[in-house]
Image: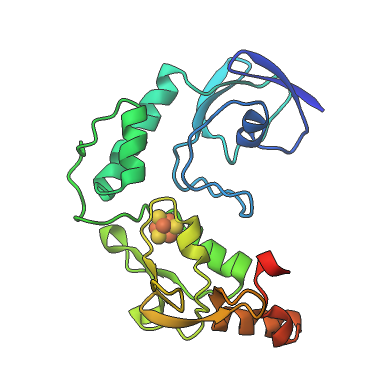
Length: 239
Ligand code: SF4
């Protein structure tokens, strides 16, 4: 175990943990948009910056990547930290001026919701955090989406922006997206889901009759896990 200080609070932590993890475990809130417990941290959004001091040296680091160390002193809300965080937020707002999530964060941090920098485009809500792409690849295992183009044109999409034959309609990308950029629609009856330009038929639970998952997703799980398809035709509530 090692000893460090976060926001003047003396903390004992396991070596190898990150500052963000240890801060959270101790009730200290650090904002972030690209962190998820099931994914490796990447430091994409840069909102989790903190000031880390070791000896006489103080520097701004991304807390989701920075490991705790003996004698480390961390300030999560210093003026320097807040200035960097506000600047990051202004840059994100310039890319995604319509994002409700960003506008709410801006209000909390005292940043004007109107972009300080010229917006790249209108109606873009993607901050390029890669959460959706990584979830699809690392957790779901299908790699149905990725990034295309560069610079201000960079966006997340299916290969060649065509219907993805590998997408199983699970919607994990839409669930993890912090800004609501990925559109997923479910019909009123619940029998159809639309995502990434494709339409998926939903499976009914053989016990309660409720639509609960895309047929393609269940077929994928059945193949991967070698579970008979009929064993998967029951929703979580009825299992
Ligand atoms: S669509 Fe959402 S999850 Fe994917 S990169 Fe953009 S903001 Fe991140």
